[in-house]
Length: 504
Image (cartoon, rainbow, N blue to C red):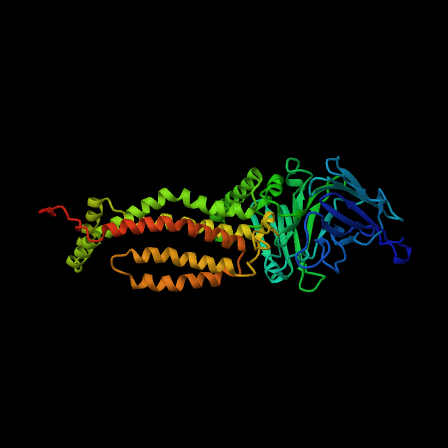
């Protein structure tokens, strides 16, 4: 293993800039480290200036080490020569350009070269290189100490800070920043990533998905206490090939659903959406909602606020047939209630006979006691999915609507949560007033549930409030129709039963 160069022999550090319409990256000639990753298309919501994904005070990301046996060669501070020396300026629509970092050890044959390929129209950076003079070393790439804070609500953003990886056999796993204990995540991995609420720094195995084989998967991740306070550091490991060659890709940019989907390997699920036991159910809903929102916004050139209103109304229109079926089930339930009570009183001491007679009653009147449940349950997965859509959908970040400054954050005036509560009260009030015999429990919930929902939703995304309130308002006409049908049934002659079977 070659020895490190003494500090007094080091040349002066130089900074090299790569700029495009999408980003501005600043590298150091010492260690080829990334010192700035500025997103040109986005603004920070917590301070003035540029949105830089590298935290203030960080010593630079993407520094590298080589490990052979028990020996480690730290390249994160050695002097590299850079070509071109003046950096790169990329214009939209132009071909990709390359930036090369080369280190030649002064007293041995060891040579290390890393080449970054940048495209002006995408956030993916292709990386290739060679490490000559060593026998199949392990390459360690420092992904850094998490991403910088960029949102107005830092407490909320802190809950989204974490690292995610996609294991070849075990799939996607996520860990939030509260876990700063030293952890070794064994591969093989397809990718590993640092993320915050809306942005991402990811490393993907191989120069492309198609060219990636078991030999060049990421070997794993090392997670340990960070160099910055209350931070964690993540390092990716990869075995260098027989001829000293290595290749991988970086994604440094927004969690844009379409961009991440195009990368493959389920990169769009870098935010796993919810609790592990719920993810299988939520992911299809989240994916569908996100695609619909983006499609309607781009196709009809509608602002996202209006898209959410249309979505809320559209959901109620789609569910109308199911709600009609549920309404008929509710009306049948009202009609057979006297008969059900009669059977329950008559056979209260004979459970077996009670069950038999109840089934017979359902059959005679075509009544399904659970027929009204599905339409009431269906909107809830959609609502929960919307919650996770607003957690990390970059398309909604900083988008204003009417008096709302940002659909991805709470309503600062709390008007929408209050309107949501009023809409819920009206829905329940219409239903309650149409009942022949008022239900005390329902009356109690009518006054308790709306304030409770106001309290829950007042700190959630205003876009989520907008969708839910719209869906509630769109439901009120249907509730009024159901109430009118209930009124018609009041005072009608109760249903009769077919004569009992003398052999039954």
